[in-house]
Image (cartoon, rainbow, N blue to C red):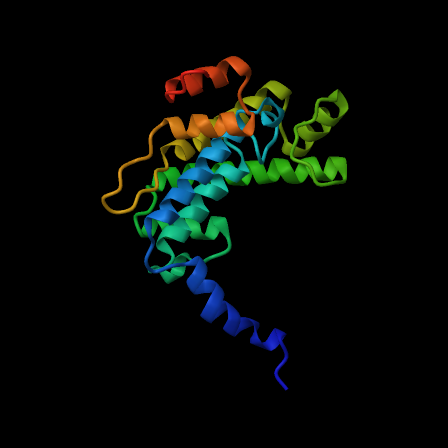
Length: 214
């Protein structure tokens, strides 16, 4: 008797893998990727996430988005990109000229640093969290765990990694053959929709998009 679990490998090979890693991509896939990127970009503007290692600017989520979307776009024809480990797939993306070596090195360094800080934060709090501490004792614990002398030095290193990630995230463009880049207003409108902008910023974006009564 063949159990459902025994058939899991066949399900992945015949159904899930061809669905995730498509050999041929239509315009809808690229449009969806652009929309997802715009939503992430809009959400990181929310001040509530500015001290969040995962969801904030230059955070873990942006690195995962860069790498995983490149896997989705190229993994249908390049089997060795179907790799669950982000750090393992980065050199493969370089090999297939999906990423420059320097970009991959910066993303790998930032990912290791952010994941290390995340691990230390969660050990201190004894729960799942990605928010940097505000209490002086917890900050001191994090500094000790990271081997950093003071908070200013920690923020310097953290912001350097985040700035590199944000730069690469901003530069990622998803277009199909013959498809022009989406207008820049799309990202701003996504920020209005998600409530990431204040009233004046939202009104300016709507006015720029052509709404007479912003």
